[in-house]
Length: 402
Length: 189
Image (cartoon, rainbow over all chains, first blue to last red; front, side, top):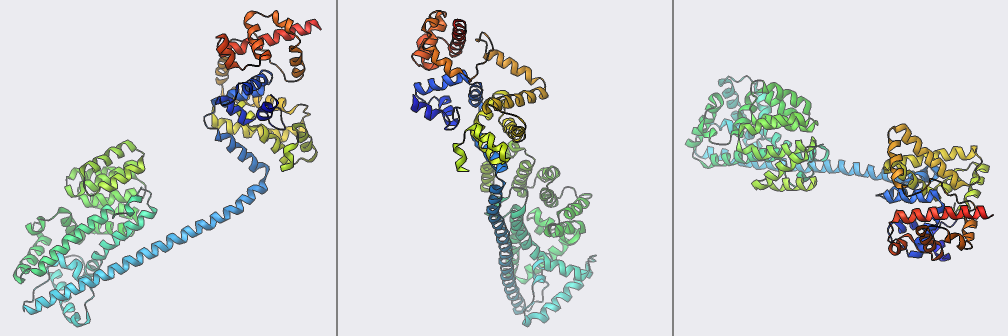
């Protein structure tokens, strides 16, 4: 019995120890130990009440937490010591910041290198095509709609610089002929930047993963939807460029004239036979200043300005799926998921199959941000069931949600 | 701080009064944290509220220990803790009625709300063994429960199994039987 008392009561207090109380509640004590406790409880109201209360306690860690809080009040020196240790945490935080800055710098460096390599490739391709043109003695005009986005962005090699300047002069004249409002310098700048824009957009999307409020963590593993979209457009352009290079000069002339027509009438079957997003890219980037401004702001991560430009653009072009998608993503970036949702709905209503899956994906992100987890889950499950490009991403988001 | 472990509650109170060093009151409170938490939990029924209440009681302790003469710390702490909870429930409004309701159900088997105190009870317990004659005067239910609990040193669960009474009935018979025996002893003296 004495040994039981020694186990049950606190050493320097006549009260039942915490462990003995838990033992009694969990029924892990011997009958004699239980008897000792019950005998004490008959005489000690505090222990009796405490035991009753502890039987209601679900998380016994709460008592330990309270003890820690009391300890910090009693021993501020200890807490100061703890703070000394937390200085290490501060250092850790600095290291983390430095590491992320280095990561961003490294990433941008890699992307710049990739851009340069791609530029070089395009330059080489351009030289080849120029040589083909020379060899056939046909002074053909470059297919404007496709070429002014890439070819003009290249720095011509010294040997072909004169030809390139001549080509640019021709291009300038051509622009005047078409009566385009944009100045030559702006047009040149635009065409130079267009290809870079595509790559920069990809870069921005990757960088945004680090600080985006929307859950894009899984996007690190694969390109963001917009990035993919741009890549698709770029790829299709590449295919067309290659096919142009392989085609006869006559065909190239035909295509060139068709693309010129497309600029004025926007009804070219050659272009319309492609995806509508290509159409939008070409038409809107060349003609609509609000769309271009919106896109530029988007690329510069100036989302509020991008939203403002796109909203202006929507006054006359409310149904453009690409603009709606850009604007919706901008709203997501500024944390206004509620405003992103109707835009994404517009994209879906548009019915362009190319956008549906990625729009649904962004819609699910908006749902997550709006704490509509059930809707998000349903949509992500739908994406998974469709077994498309976003299946894995959707699965990853679903895992995060669970 | 390790040396404080061997101080009794009253020694810690005295040391705190002498020095005003919070380490003494800290040790005192750490020793009883689970009891204060348990008491608060019984009355407040909410773990987060309990945490806040325990912290408030502790802060009260720091100032009140210096003001009051305390002969028996644990009883005083129990009173402070219980009063804090009842004041909280009273301020919350309505909840006090709930508490009363709960207590009514809990003690429905008790014949009176008379509460036992630890002071001097050990002495009386020793006399219980000499009061077998007094036990014979109890009713059958109280008698069997008192005998099984005090003389055969069985726990409630064992008495429940043997007698077939519910746990609350066993508790009640023991408490009431004990009180009747005390009265008997007082009258004899």
